[in-house]
Image 1: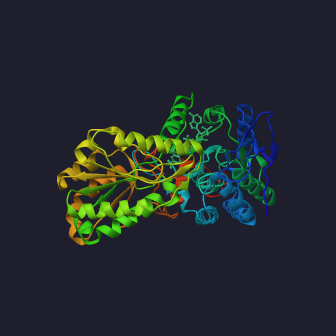
Image 2 (image 1 turned 60 degrees about the vertical axis):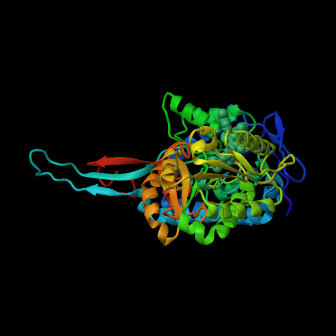
Image 3 (image 1 turned 180 degrees about the horizontal axis):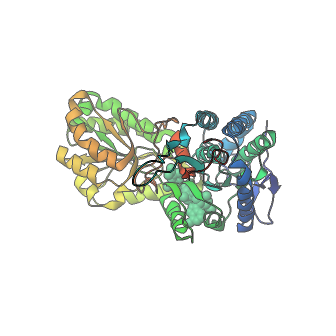
Length: 504
Ligand code: NAP
């Protein structure tokens, strides 16, 4: 099935176009024209979302679960066409798009199951104590309620799982919040066909049309109008530190500030402990190279830094990584802009004092090849630029003189999505010293694996202290992510006949 996008925005059940258009920039195939989003369209979408909230926010959990299941079904019904347009626009391989679609529908279905169980409501009850002295206690109940319309920014690097019907949208819809998506300009056609699937589910489940809108990108004023709209109550975002910070600041400056749940990426350090490196340095080096270059390194959990202790065994690890990376072919990046940011980020890293290039590459237009650099812990700790994420398949080996320096290095990291320990049992003493530091730095600490696979489940935390995310109390992956779009309300002495159905 071939899908040809019509290039319109979906505003509360209607496909709408504005006068101006922009052209998509697919990695393969022909470009298509898309209508440019405007602040007026944002206003219409958000007003419709607020109207929809008065029914959708009070729908039953069973109704919302059926709606989420219907969205998943409608996405599957368009599977082939989604993969076709997704691969054309992003340059990601077919297998990746197919896998990501499974993850996206899996997320929607997981949230359907999650809300049916009802635990997420966190219902509490303190019975009345009319005879308590010196004062009686009233009857108190508490439950989580949806917050209202939510803005979602589609991420460039996950055109399905973190985009139009991705994790943020699934969590908000599960909570009972209508969603307005700002589509990412890197995959507007993929956004359109997924929006078409959501609209089909809206019709099938007879949901209010304003429960979902997609405003395609175009200019910065779309995103800015969206986060500043007075009826928007929270924002879900995955993208760059600069873009996320600008939008976060706009949210804080509003007359009514709102939470901005920004996931801004990190360098995801791996601490290579000495026994593990001595026993399996070569395999670890090869494993790191595979993780680092997977998907052209365009993952927020890409392990960009490996910290090793100086010595011949560390050299074996580094040489194995270098050899494996040197055989990795060129991979198409998501956009021209991301590819040029990668090349200039690599050039800047190579120019820093004390940085030695172990593997440097020539990259054509939109294609990335791996880079590998090495620096001493002392030079790294003295230069903040070396702690910044370079989005793509770039690795930096940081060499510590001894264990104390490795601990100092761990303390000097900023907030991270993940931190990894590669360790054997004989490394447990050092790992125990690192753990209290790493759990203050990262949303997820893992041992003997690579952080690039993010399981969608109840225990997952995909977040972390700033700059990994703008809100360290939250996660953007897994069932806990629904909490971002809920607000606790206490009901004091409210008669059962008036209480919300989930409490009565
Ligand atoms: P981005 O530039 O942060 O853009 C993400 C979204 O936010 C886009 O829809 C963008 O709209 C919008 N936006 C950004 N700055 C804005 C502003 N000041 N005002 C209004 N809207 C704004 O991220 P990207 O396009 O995905 O990729 C660029 C870089 O982000 C990459 O090179 C990489 O460094 C990083 N990145 C990180 C992650 C991660 O996992 N954390 C994921 C992807 C990318 P426009 O398209 O109109 O600018």
